[in-house]
Image (cartoon, rainbow, N blue to C red):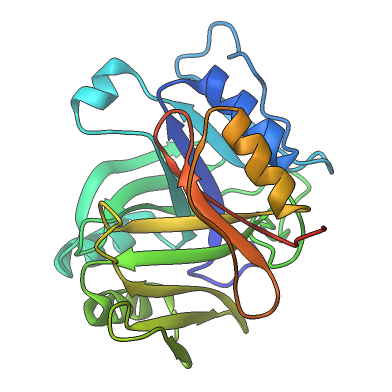
Length: 266
């Protein structure tokens, strides 16, 4: 894979209602998630397809058994590592936890872990399909609609989180925006020669620490209107951010937090 180690290479929505979630995200993002599961599949897993026909991640239907074990609707990112077993051993030794041990399928090996503050994410060593060796993952793209455009971490311990992700994934923190005494520093994440997101101390109104992934849309106001009409709950925005974009944050109909970024067309 051509991406630098430590890159976000896949995004996954875990949800209790895949049919409803597909209808919601298709309407607001322009994605093409199948609105019904494949017959006979052992798990309800659907690809998130963009207009160009490529995948921007996947959607996993949570079973009652998964929910009994603590799973709940949320977005989770996959970070690229050279060796999954070595990565989870290092993460465990550094205060993280293994939530799902290494699993190997035809597209690669992966495991679900947490950082020391309990935030879940996957580590993955992908296997390229035949004839596609060396092709990069493009699920993250700063400017293209239909891609994740920004990776934001709300953490219970900003200094510890910065050190953890720097050690294990090569994240660097060269700039910060001070947002006042209540919110503190918004620390930009530099990785692979670009700024891919930021970290900040979790605000009191955010229920739990976690990664927040901003999906780029063409028209932020139209996306907000559609999200609310389709049963989502917008709790913040649209508000303008440096650079001229506008953002919203909310919860989808199944309770997963979601975030959108885009231009204001009116």
